[in-house]
Amino acid sequence: MSTSPAPRASERRLIELIAAHGPLTRAELTELSGIPRRTVSGAAARLLARGLLTQKKTSGCLPDGPRTEEARRRGPTADALHLPDTPGGVLVVLITHEDIAVCEVGPDGRRTPVAKEPFQWWTCTDPAVEVERLLTAVPGRDPVQRVSRMVLGVPQPYRQDHGVTLLGEDVPGYYGIDEYPAWLTTDLAAALSHRFGVPAHVENLINLAALGEASAGAARGRHSVLYLRLGDIVAGAVVVQGHVLRGALGAAGEIGHIRVDPHGMLCACGGRGCLGTVANARHLLDVLRPRYGQDLDLFDVVALAVQGDRTVRGVLTDLGRTVGMAIAGGLLMLNPETVVIDPVLGPATAPVIDGLIEAVHQTLPATLARALTVVPGMRQDDAAFIGGRALADRGKSSARR
Image (cartoon, rainbow, N blue to C red; front, side):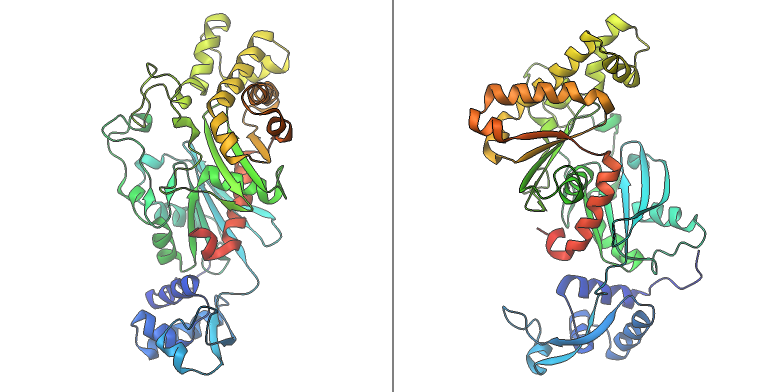
């Protein structure tokens, strides 16, 4: 790893303020930060020298008026500090229920894998420390100089500026977790920005994948997209005109918690018979193992489906049909142009899509059903890395929408 120094607290603060407010003069930074002018000037000089900030003339007022008292006092133009105009690499970190993966995504979308290893988020005490550990383990990798922004994807609904939204109270947590780590309910974006000195964004992993599909995948250029992951888990996300719909608590798209059987299994959210308890991999295997043996796993299911096994393909079609019936009301309300299915089941995704389309035609008006396109997407990690880059490029306005 490079021996260049980590950003000082004053430098991190300047970057945070510029990321939040846009271009600012040194005087404005002094006013907003409360840091002495001499310290601000020194921090700005170091950031300029390392290419983490740029400087150019800028107007003293935004369309809706000046930002600060200093902006009112200065003339029509002044030297202001900006984040670099040409985006550098974006470091995208994806945390799933099984692993953590880090990838650097360039301005052209080219992806450079950094690290990937098994990971249990529920035993992690500080994700920022884990990311730094992964980066420092790679020779020549400098998180400050190599990237202009960071994006972290987490496998739970995430409320911007607040943390993970825990859907259940006083019920067994995911994987039988008795106590969730404290960082889940904190502003991870602020923690990452503070530690690495670059603007940071945090998003639900499924939302990132949906944004990736809408930006450069099967739904590129489509007005509205519903993204679904089916087969191992049940999850969803919605993108409209390039923006993720998050909802009041960041839980928009959590279709796995639609209740379809009031007498069904207890779900982590506290409800019974949620869609995620009857349309996941465990349920799929429970249905098929009496016929194919207790050693049957998801890979075997895919293989049997590809070989044309009618029973397996029928069960997969039922899975798609069950999900389609459960989300019919949402499809009618949103009227999306495209539904993208995560191909976690590989070639066995086809019968799932068939079942979903069948349910759509049974439940929606014929005109809407015919107008809806249902297609398989790319691998979740690939889509999420692309979505992370797209989110970072949209900057503050997208991250807080």
